[in-house]
Length: 244
DNA sequence: TCCCAGGGGCCGA
DNA sequence: TCGGCCCATGGG
Image (cartoon, rainbow, N blue to C red; front, side, top):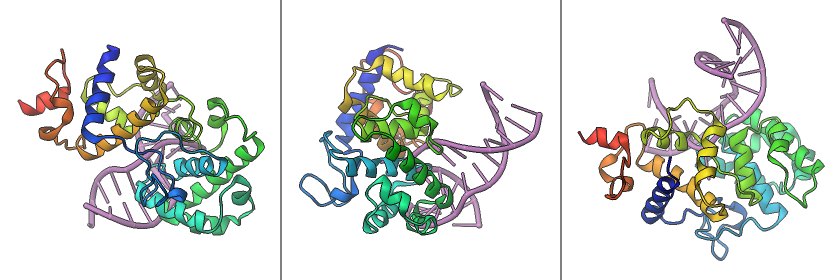
């Protein structure tokens, strides 16, 4: 795949949707530069302290296979209970922790996952960020969650691949769908400039675009990726077939 | 009522 | 290694 292809896709998505403000930080909602849901569009300097990094990390676990609206409620309750650090989570009763995060679904599993992550972060030096390998060793942290934490909490240059990314590339016929997580991750990291804001924004834009347009039953008529006349091949093979 | 969400662990083949 | 199953709430 030509590297310019993924950059063209990025430019088109950015022009259509603008900065997405990921990762939102609930504890800063309403403050200068943040909307009432904690989004901070176009500013990639957050999180800035251990508490904010921890909130993003908790959110990455809570967001597993769960809509963000449900995650927001859980984060809000964690904040209300004053759980802002790994130590806070670890000393909080498990049954009560489970109740706080009920809205995020899979609450029995996720309460244990939050504890496992907290135990890891407590044992780990908070000064320099954890490695990908270390995070993957933590129970409940898979590749997507690890990369989300590294990119959005620790500003480490890791491209986040999710089900939306996979669907988008399948519809471009850029992948078959049988590729593993790391294969798809490499497609992006090999093609894109090493730029933190680009990585952060690209993943967020893919989520926005696929949720909104590239659904299971896609809305190709208004797809911003079908307006590029200079593309030599697709842009979206699915859309081309769809229009026939 | 059904389907899907900003996945990951576990288990059997 | 890989597919299938389980976890679970809430909104459309």
